Image (cartoon, rainbow, N blue to C red):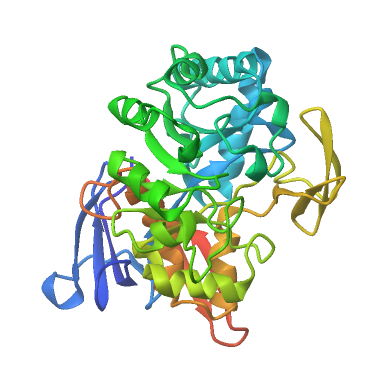
Length: 387
């Protein structure tokens, strides 16, 4: 059991000035208030002005420790458990295993394995939790498929959507699709009726087509700038429509390869930082392993310094953990420390309708420290005394 405690002199996302954070015996936040408003008797932890946040949430991660989520089999439960523990050690509390375009059979197999894992896996301290599944495909525009295999792309219609979901509609939390492929405008409304967040991506959609999709209920964009037309002063396209829409949040990969820092700065400023964006890792199966050549569906990817590419040079993803993106944004001077932290901890939660840091939330907290001498940002999990 966690002992009642008070954390003092903390900077908390969304709160002005130094705060006190109370944690009750059940390990939940019982109060957040300015230092002057709460009694300081019995303070257990003085974080001396460091930032305090919930742990990260990764809404787009394709695998880790050599296991790609679209390749899951019934014998992979132990490996999934190891991945959850690994991600917990990387500062992530919750994530969506992402299934990229594959056959309907493999979609169904992976969904079945994850569903079984969620009912049988043991819950260990510090282990990241699976919130559900992100289906990135197979309803993508062929010209913007990126590394997704063309042979498994499907027309976007209600029949195909139901086939891909099968009996696992409640397990799927996010689906990425190209809205211009839906000739009947039925798919987005149907997915929203199931509570699935619709994210637009791998798309050639015009601004008008994107706006129509937003009106139908789409509320996210998958890896902004990547696999979609760039911003153009006469053709703003999907991304331009998303940036200017107050209810839409864009996922972005801050590894310096998927989007160059200058364009990231434009995106951050145009979107209001964490108000319109959230960070994703888009990490592939070699996450947690070294550089090298690894299998990827029936193909191979080469990982160099955290960037994964196909043999023809096509950018396939990254192997950098989510919180490295936070550190990159700060190191590149693109946004304030509080905003960078919120982009990986608060914004992803808000994007799928979850609450951010506040009373009643489990106190799975990260402590962020800015090192003046090296101009670096580091983090660690806040450790509580137990009784």
